[in-house]
Image (cartoon, rainbow, N blue to C red; front, top):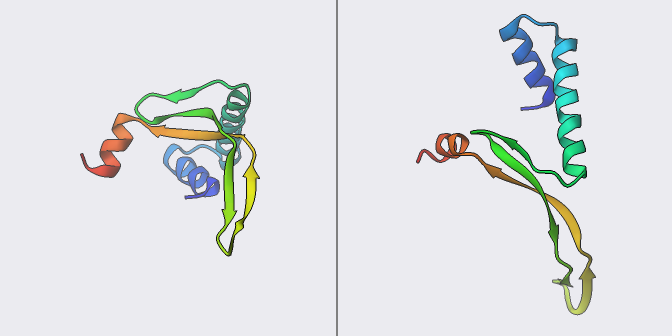
Amino acid sequence: MTKRDLVMRIADETGLIQQDVYAVIQKSLDYIVESLDKGETVEFRNFGVFEVRERKQRIGRNPNKPANVVTIPARKVVKFKPGKVMREKITGC
């Protein structure tokens, strides 16, 4: 599903104008990214939690030339942990 698909589906179900729905979705995503950039955790009950974690520096190797060692620098990554409702729907447990 793309953002466009989501906008069209919400607009059809609610009767709202697609431009208004798009604006709300885009602003929501902007605020989520802004919060993650500040290092905050974004939590949606029963859906899941987004958080920023620091990945440690590590050593990488080229599989074709294992003698070549490359240092992969530390970096920030966004982790998502699904909530209880999502986990139950997807896994069936």
